[in-house]
Length: 379
Image (cartoon, rainbow, N blue to C red; front, side, top):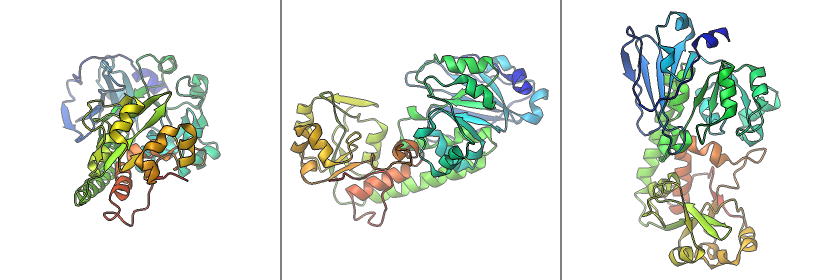
């Protein structure tokens, strides 16, 4: 802890300039092919600089973190005032704050470093749930109001934060207590492979860069291969998405993460020409006008059966996808405590999501695929 006290510094920046010690010229930039929200520079001195450009949507803040090997920490000439945190590595005790972080840790083989999480009931991974049951991962409350006293009691070397704005009193308390906090913005990425590439963000904290490259290259190759395979399908079905909530139909925008999956699965998304990267807010009249004859309906909110749809509103029965029983949901794929696998594992394994959708839209293309996330709505 004393080592952290010597190194930790918090300071926000609005530019992307990287300041290094005079005797530590830039060495190699890690290749980031799809992700837009972070960059990594490895210095000749062995210090790694991680810059997070998009910690949350529309952020005007850029955060810079210096990762210093423990054996070099006291000899480093790094100007700590230039960084939001200076972190001794490798990390041995870790707290993360989003379920999307769990699969990255497991893929790197460092899940045993995880000692705390806010809302452990939302974690679905069988491997990590076993560690929770054995008391090796402490429930820290909720992300919005994490129990900072509990965090301090387990003495993590690092907290990987999830933020929707710059103000988080809990994180500020931890920083003042000399526990480094870094922001992870994987959820702000717009492309499937962009989200998955954030495994490279985690890797330098554990010295696992080569393994992260290998894991991501495998996912990328799988995604690209099945995307190419989907192009062999002779038909391009029309696909709708979303559901009503208080008389407003919410659906993915045409430039969103969800819409890109549909496009890559060689299907025609109903609202593909809209410019939104988030969600659309539509009237039931417009959805019926445009989507009544859609071939498939995916992601109907949290509904898991046709009877639930019918009981919610009679409007749903007017769609041909309802009549033809071609509605598919991710809400049936749950972990032991009810967490949805789609939101935990999905961002890290876009190739599996794409395979699911191709299997649905073009069953002859991937006839032997076993669905992981998307399954037919129950009767």
